[in-house]
Image 1 (tube, rainbow, N blue to C red):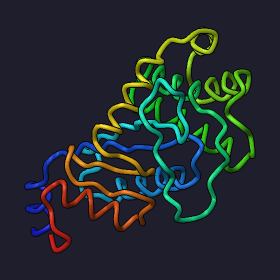
Image 2: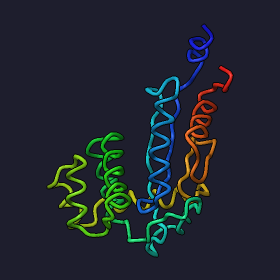
Image 3: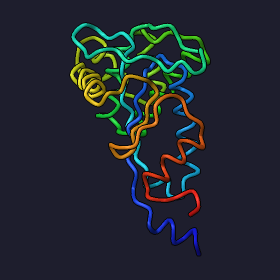
Length: 199
């Protein structure tokens, strides 16, 4: 059948999803990307890596990225460095699934529960609810571990010319910057996999 033959030709797709943890459009983008992957012919062959940046990082970081002004619903900057360090911890503790759960919990807290994410006690609770070990989270928040990982993402964004969030890079090549529709994310996936919309 045509569909079967088309999917046999598809290749695996790796997505780098650049986000700011206090940006509403990034929350919407995460939901839409998840939906697009679910609709994709081979969702199990899509890997997603979330990479975080700050709007106004500290002076030891690369230049700030600017939010994509598409919905006008940005949260006010609260300082996300500690939250970003917890995302880096989640990478080590559980990989993509745990990272996704933590980012989702942080987004929901801000944009559905109106809870700021710049308070250590709040971050400890949210991270635990997302599935991270509370003892590890407390240790990270009490120190400066995983700061290098945060700086590395900030520097990589500058090197790659990522100056708008959300931004999705497929297989290190095709870029979709700004908040897009589910259909646009799906088209990006299909193009990266070597499929056409006619397949």
